[in-house]
Image 1 (cartoon, rainbow, N blue to C red):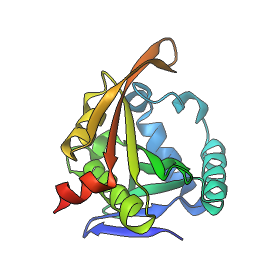
Image 2 (image 1 turned 90 degrees about the vertical axis):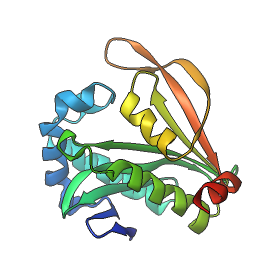
Image 3 (image 1 turned 135 degrees about the vertical axis):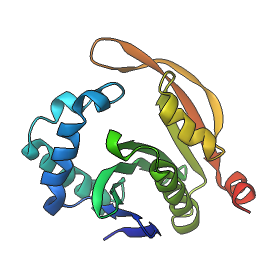
Length: 183
């Protein structure tokens, strides 16, 4: 089981079936807020949908294909941070994240992404971490920029978001650059 203590009030822990109801309630409370940038919100209509998500991600974790964690802030689930896909052949990973609106402004997401990036480079021996965010999603982009990720470019109309396509900015961090930034 994956558990990573970040600071006194913050940790990452592997998604678990026993936390499905709390996770679903977080999504349900933040439905309109999350829907602005996340295409899956309308597919998460019940706690059973959340349970299916958790079970699929536990299977992928067991198969070393991904790592999906709860962001736990002051003993509450505040959001999700994940390695969406782990590419072992190319030693790279893509990080995704979201957080409930009521938890913003506490440095939670930046701390979680920093912890996952450290895990990718220091524990898993990966070489590249990538973050993609919609061009207009300034808060998500700010996380990558705050941590020193390099903007590589824009992928046009890469995601269908309910009724329109959005462009994504691609950011990356290489292990050799991370060592320099963290020194």
